[in-house]
Amino acid sequence: MMDLWWRFSRNGAALLGLFILLGVIGLALAAPLLYPESPFRVVGKPFLAPFSDYLFGTDVLGRDIAAGIAHGARTSLLIGFLATVVAVCVGTLIGGFAGYYGGWIDDALMRLTEFFQTIPSFIFAILLVAILTPSIKSIIIAIAAVTWPPIARLARGGFLATRHREFIQACVCLGMSNLRVMFRHILPNCVSPIIVTGSLMVATAILIESALSFLGLGDPNIMSWGFMIGAGRSFLRTAWWVCTIPGLAILLTVLAINLLGEGLNDALNPRLRNL
Amino acid sequence: MGQSLSLAKSRFHYILRRVIQGLLVVLAIVILSFLLLQLAPGDAAEVLAGEAGAATPEYMDQLRRKFGLDKPPYVQLLAYVQNVITLDIGYSFRHNMPVLNLILGRLGPTLLLMGTAFVLSTGSGMLLGLLASMRVNSWRDNLISILALVAYATPLFWVGLMLILLFSIRLDWFPTSGMETVAAFYEGWNRVVDIAYHLVLPAITMSLFYLAIYTRLMRASMLEQASMDYVTAARAKGLTERQIAFKHILRNAVLPVVTMAGVQAGSLVGGSVIVESVFAWPGLGLLAFESLFARDLNLLLGIFIFSAVLVVVMNLIVDLVYTILDPRIQVR
Image (cartoon, rainbow over all chains, first blue to last red; front, side):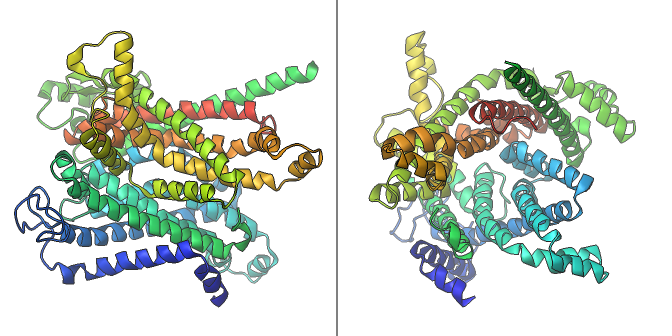
């Protein structure tokens, strides 16, 4: 563990990512303290420029953009994290069963995975949210539904590689149930690539969430960065900051998660670092 | 002679098998849409007719009969599959037009935009990756890698808005939206120039994300190939580094990029929804965006089915290109 941290901490970009992400997490946690009122509340005149009365100015209705950024951080991180957890669980289950049992189960599950990789994922996500009506739950379901296949492939590969090892055969001989062998003994041995890919998927999930809420498919009761950009896009000519600032927030967060994920990958697989 | 004949035969079998697989995927897509239709609030006839109240009661009855909504689910599924396969994917009351006609009418602009973005992202992505890999860890490599990292993390719609802000509003170089200057009634060559002019910003926006992926992939793949034995052999033969890079490494390094190009096909369709709605580009993506606003679920479903079929076809083409580029992959 110390060794892992040492290798990780020598990677300047990954540390930078860690610091930015910690900052965003801090902002998300502090949002109710910094801006206890609803971010939808009108605080002043519309289109006040940044650094006037309000740090980031106000939007078309006179809402405080800084408050929106802080509360939006909560939304982005929450949805990004939960959607990834769901996708990783679904992917690991499907890939795990495919890799462990093999045969026709493997064939069927992998065809399913390939199918979900073939269909145009963003339109599928839009369709799911539109049909289930926009809410946090439907957005999480939609994001998870389009992001699980890579995890399933990864888990299948890991289970397949571990299944015939001697200690697994020993487990089977001891009379352990299949489920116990799969999740107590095989999974811990192939979990690290799943975690790395999962951590990078949080970034993808945040991008998808922002795109959905930009299109007006966000939860109408919750402030999000994508919604702020969508609401400000018609006023690009008069108030550039309304769109620009939330976009920078998304960019920084996603960049930070990518840097962190890649740093984690390099630390776990030192051989691949120079590639 | 005999060998090349059997090669052609096995390639034909390969293509045939891929086509059959593609058809199965299309069937699965239709079944998936049927399931999605079941998820929607209200019965299928209401969804198919667009928002409630827009359709006449007679048409609703007709729809219910046509889809056999009074019959068991498997009969409904059969009826639905039959309708879709005969290209009857419903009627949009919003637009007063069959869904299929609407989609076909919007197909041209989308294909133009997707094609341009595809060529732009693969071409410049491979070029940038190549440039970065030729001098690893130089300032040029670092600059390209950082740009790729940033482009990879930027939301598409925001890039589009920022490009509009900079190049349309501040600099006034390119138009903010649309595909052509309608009021100008350009014809012939002038019209082509006008459309190309409108195409610049949307195409750049759409290609940026995959440009970043191709750049990183190409760089990694070039570096991986550079440590292979055949490269050492080429160097021992006394070839220059440039010759090795272009004649030997490049051909092998390009394969993962082609694989990724197949994956990109699917997400280009999704990206078009965002890019077209930002730039008001009159294609399928904008149609999807409009149908979202009008709550015209049936139209959205039609676009989903159609674009999924489009992706299957594009994947088929990529597979064919792959077998031509790398004869080893062939036929299993």
